Image (tube, rainbow, N blue to C red):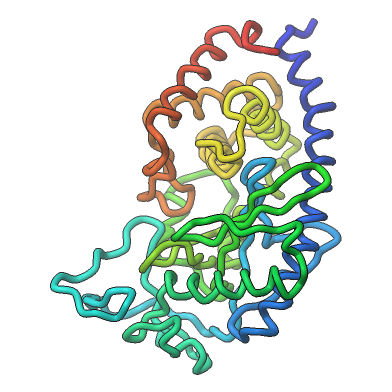
Length: 362
């Protein structure tokens, strides 16, 4: 006979998860129409940015971080034939072009410089001063150009009644009105590099049984991307590779995906709701990957309740320690800049749930 927790969680999967899927699908459908309209206009105005395509199925440019918070990657155009930088050099420039007395800080973790000379093909537009300083394509300057293009596109496309800009000096954020409510979008220019795997991503570790060598080879063939979301350094992103890993989770017939969906549902409904949660679906996805690597045996993922609680314990540990390693770039802590107060409150909530899951269920 099933326990109350097992019965509730199965009900959560059959009902709440399915309702969430329908709700999110409707919002994604409305959001991608708006984004496609805006970015098509932007691509007309500036060659360097491509339109985000409209897709009837999965759209790789839209990442749902929370029900009302989406990351939209806007692909750039013209840069091809990427190669890693061979020489390190000091940068003494400011965003306004003035020379600094001390060099800029080197990139850490998920960050790197991006030089126009790292591409075999680089149209002259990427060498212009509005985005380039001393041979570097500077994300803050790319974002400055892109922000103005978004503002103009909202007016040109007559979307000011549905879309409004948010004040953010670093990234480009807009709010879109949908039939299901407001959705906040972070619009982020992306340089896609499908022909290489970043040297910073020393993955997988030796002697790991999950994922399989064939899956690893497949994942690395998708390359990586660089996102413009800071001042001087580009941020490494592996959204395509991560999506492939998610799609191949349960090839052995396990319940990893169901466990992840239940974890996400509890996080959104009970543990950490809100429009800008300290823990997003991306953090939960990373927790899932680490747990799958630690428990690679198919028999570890046959009993749903055990798999689910295994994920909750891993999440609790990461939140309590304020430390969650990026799955591919393992020197990067995804919780480095998260609110300590919010993490501690969530850790307390998770500890209460783990002490007696039945009491914490709504």
